[in-house]
Length: 200
Ligand code: GRF
Image (cartoon, rainbow, N blue to C red):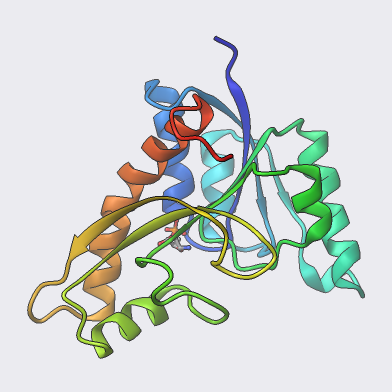
């Protein structure tokens, strides 16, 4: 079977990006990671891409006067890589209509909570986990969803729960969620690529 071409977008440490690359190299994820694109030139994900010998591109929002031009530059790079699936792994930028139109139903995100709870603008990183603890939830989790133009509101593809333990801090919870996410995201992606999970 021909491998799907996947581009990963990340802005942070990139541990999920590396987990995706490892899954392709171990064979559990039947895909070629054709590139890592970031909006944050100094981020850990970029360093990981270099170490893993994955082509990379840094396209910062500040390089462009208009949001639309920045989106078009991202879209052009993704098309240059001939990406078929766009996988967000801790990407902080807003994906606009021009990118979504170029890859319909093929832009995927993983969010570290049980959406629709604890999603939306400003809900990223440890802020999500702090809000979960503040709300005294019994459990949290991970949501993989397709992207639309509103943060964290696209159709949900898969979810898994993560237990909250007594004494958890935002940091300890983040670590537990990420550990699970590094297994869960590649396996959900494999189901999407093979059509086991249908998106329409
Ligand atoms: C992950 O928890 C992801 O769900 C969220 O940001 C985190 C990225 O972590 N959107 P890393 O950069 O992959 O280590």
